[in-house]
Length: 189
Image 1 (spheres, rainbow, N blue to C red):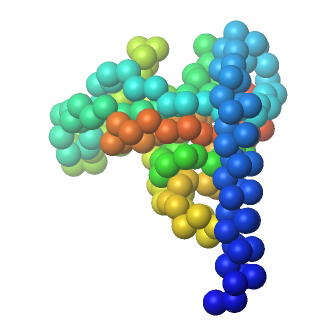
Image 2 (image 1 turned 135 degrees about the vertical axis):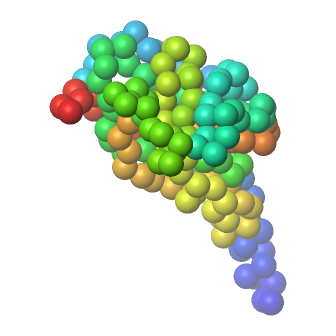
């Protein structure tokens, strides 16, 4: 390989790492989302960097078992449940320091409980006392970055649900930077 090309790759890699470190240092002090103003807003836009925290112990149910194993999950709650019964719909774009999943939670309160033949969707009792069905998005869980060849999570998706969170099941802490453009909408059915 040409020495000039190798030097260019090394310099580019160092510059990217410096930019990422500076960005992380300046945004680490970003305040978490203000849930009071969030509960009243019908349109919501945020750009934030957050470090994960251990997930609260929740009681979850899978369709083929009565409970889920206690695993020390790490989470960042980007959009919490609203107290007015509205749901979030919008777009999120993110990048994380390690491979993660995105979870969209949906209020789970069926008028008729599913029988054993049909089974229940994966659901959990959340910290607000309500049950939520969990949609775990794993399509961004291991995106290699060509400059550093490091597996991270990065991507963009359209979502609709009650809660939006970033999630890591193995208990390893992570940092995520995200931009959300969302609106709170009433459920019509």
